[in-house]
Every structure is written in structure tokens, then in C-alpha cells.
Figure 1: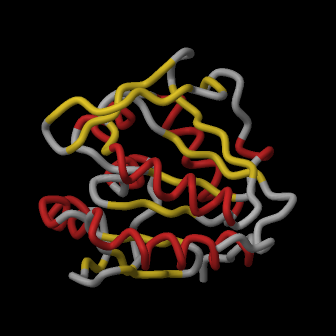
Figure 2 (figure 1 turned 45 degrees about the horizontal axis):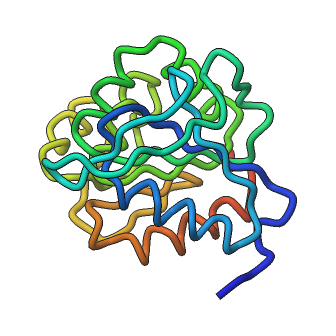
Length: 186
């Protein structure tokens, strides 16, 4: 189903090697079907390697490197999971700064599975109600979030989900949040 909810909006998907294939491809498809322009942003140019759980999946073409990306050019940010991808992004100061710019400006962020992990480094989880892959529960809680085991959680423009099974609900709430644009943290 094609809609126009996100016509005229450009959304960034921040990822690197080791992203969970379906957690990047399904949100990108949903965003494009809703009318958004989507750019995959990564620390390096060329392609990034996807995974299907533990096995290598397809590669995705990088549209823009972190070095040339500016958060001001985007209406929202998607953080796909996979264990390797978010862990690697946490070690990239430019990635944390990029995420932090979305947080600071109140732009919506959607993160699934292990995707919320770099939000800790961007100081974006304290006081937030969130979900994630269960192994992140202690990390998110220790960083000040209230962790819950729910399909999708929306907290003032921050959309989180637990795993690929949650993608239909995640994509729907992500599109709603991106359509609403900016959110102020109380």
C-alpha cells in the first residue's frame, strides 16, 4: 500500500557492516512506500554487509558517508539492529554525534532490536520508556531508561521494537512518528 504520509521528507538509516538484513530492508521499503526519500548513511563509502542472524546476507549500497551527512538534512533517523552493526557504531564518534544531533533537535528516531544500543552513547535514553532485544535491557536500564517487553514502544518521537517479528508494528509507528516531525522532550 502506497501512501503520501512522508512525501517531501528525507529519512536517514544509519548502519555499518553487520546490520540485520530485514531490519534495514523492511523499514526502507515501508518508508519509500509512504513517500519518503531514504538515504543509507554509513561510516564508509561503497557497500555495507548485511546479516541474516549469524549468516552473511546481502550488501546494501551506502548513499552518503557520515563525513558528508548532516542531520539537518533529514526528518528522522532509523537505527537497524544486528549485534555487530550497533556495537561498531558506538565506537564511531561521528556516528554518535550524528545521532546526538537528532536527539538535540527533537527529530524522531526509530531503533529496533540491538539498534537502541548507540542511543546510550548519544545520551538519548535517560527517562525514556523503551524496548529492545532482551540482552540490552541491563544496558538501557543502567543508562536511565525504563525497559519494557512490548512489541513497539513510542516515547515522544522515539520508536523502539524488540526483533524482526515486530517489524510490521515498528514500521507503522515509525511512519507515524516521522509524519509528526519534531518532538520536544519534557
